[in-house]
Amino acid sequence: MKHLYLMRHGETLFNVQKRTQGWCDSPLTEKGIADAKSAHEFMKHFSVKFDAFYSSTSERASDTLEIIFPNVNYKRLKGLKEMNFGAFEGQPTYLEVWDKSTFYAQFNGETREALTNRMLKTLTEMLSNPIHNNIFAVSHGAACWFFLEDKAVCEQTNAEGFHNLDLMHFAFDGEHFIFKEIIKTV
Image (tube, rainbow, N blue to C red):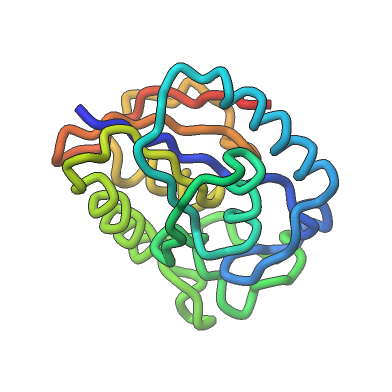
């Protein structure tokens, strides 16, 4: 059995400004950096040793990984990016719709199904390497949460949402991602 530890990036400027942030990017805030440093301390004492490290190509994700695990080699993957919200990128979050399944596609964005299929393909490829048994990756809130809901075997999450620097733990049996827990790192 292989294991995936999938983290949401630290707090960003657009998180604070309550702006939609998908494929567009904004920097980590001072709090985001400080919290990532706290997560670094948490991960120094984490019982799992990782074989490989991955990040979304968004700077907020790679910056988070570099703070938590300085000086590790990692690969940036487009498949770990956040949902593309099209014309709603950078706009106030109050304009977002509750049902994100297909709405954003009509505004040059992405459907929820396209996002979760992209995440499934990317995560499966990451774990197909025979020497990778424990993988750490940094991605995004909607990308992680929708993957959990739509593509993972999950009885219940035992959590209220998925916050910055939370870590989702999945087991992977070669075919299925089995949700285990959400770990609070800060």
